[in-house]
Length: 110
Image (tube, rainbow, N blue to C red; front, side, top):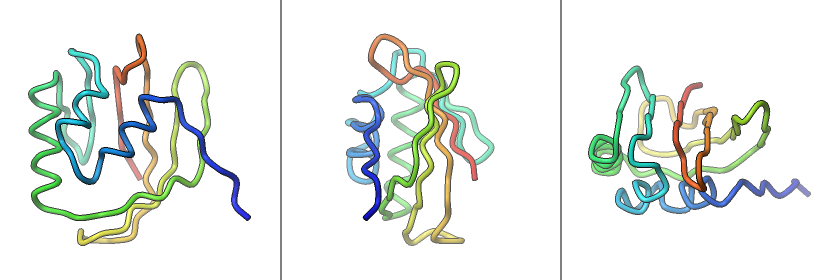
């Protein structure tokens, strides 16, 4: 039996909304948050909303949380992403920095 992954609330909310609702994802972030994904940087809520809207328009996917580690204020979630994108499935590491109960920074990388 696998161990249950129990991320902090803003991260749990991010993964719950991630594959279906760009606006719900955006609400997980601070106003001036920064996201780095696939070689691009998105700064602020409008850019983050556009990033998620574009991803959701192109792909359908599921995310299975595999591991969680927290070091020096950074929460790293390892996840298996499976969907209709090139290279599926893929193991990704999501590096979250939280501030005031929201995501201030997120970097997604293999």
